[in-house]
Amino acid sequence: MTEFATSPAPADVVRRQYLASAAGDLDALRATLAPDVEWTEMAGFPLAGTYRTPEGVTANVMEKLGQDWDGWTAHDDTYVVDGDRVVVLARYSAVNKATGKAIDVRVAHSFVVRGGLIVRFEQFVDTALVRDAMTD
Image 1: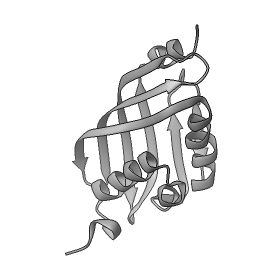
Image 2 (image 1 turned 180 degrees about the horizontal axis):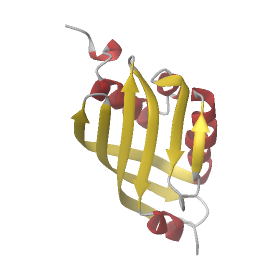
Image 3 (image 1 turned 90 degrees about the vertical axis):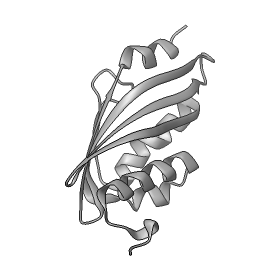
Image 4 (image 1 turned 60 degrees about the horizontal axis):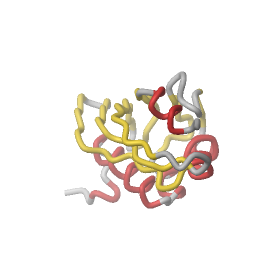
């Protein structure tokens, strides 16, 4: 049986990504991403756009979230797996550094995992709730 830390099973790869993100371990997070990953943050989200390469994802998403928010965490709770596709229902929690306002927002993340690496990610979130926390 394959150990969780090296399992190529799509749900295990995605779970490692969440654990690395929560721990702030960007090297471990990048290790879950394919070299040609396409990571899409939803239109209307402060970091909206599609980012490529593991370094591009962490520099343009995780590092920027850390600059603007205290304690940004995606709490994954429900996994729906269909072959190489994994949809995760989760919740974002954080406090905006500029306004001091907290968020607790439901989110859905869609992943495609191939060869033990995330090749595609798409975020679905109520962007208005995130933006409201960023304005006075």
